[in-house]
Amino acid sequence: MKKQNIEKIETLTSKELGFLMDTDFLVTKSQLIKKMESILSETEQSLVRLVQSSGYKFPEKTLIKAGKISKGENYRLLPYLVLDYPRLSTKENLFLYRTIFWWGHYFSFTLQMEGHLAQNVLQKLIHDCSEITGKNLLLYSGMDRWCHDLGDPGYISIDTLEVDDLKKILSNLQFLKISAKSPLEDYTKVEENSTQYLKLFAELLSH
Image (tube, rainbow, N blue to C red; front, side, top):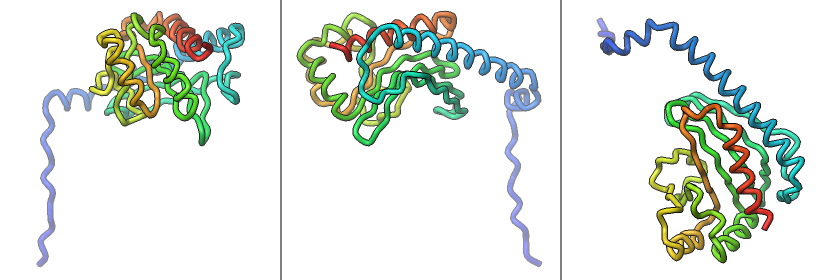
């Protein structure tokens, strides 16, 4: 008679069993995600008002009428929400301003550019990088263009670099990502912070 292969059932820890039996946490999590979505929705409205009243010169075909909020459950095993506004994505160029909520970590605000748009801005910064110094910004120097973990070694604090070192890094980049972050405790300031960083990045693009 052929023996059946019986897999051994893995034993749960007391902590795991507690989570398995806890219905309150998942209900609370669902409520919190909805509240974070509401914060990003209000932030989107504030950004739209800023863009429509400012006269900033964004790249041609940039979508500025409305933003896009995306969500997921598994950025490095944790839930997240992303607001993209304004945004442009073509074969030739990428331009995104991203406001991100990452469960258990922080809110982040990122300018991301590729193509000749990025090269134009990089050349401006290499000539004069004063607009991004002294503002608690992080510059991404790695190869994974979709890395949003600001603790990744590819992210470098701009304010810790000498000007010559910063310009050397900028001259070697194939795409541009500049980020800032705020703690989850500052959830009431996300709209204000996101708007202020978009102002900063928009002025960088306009010069």
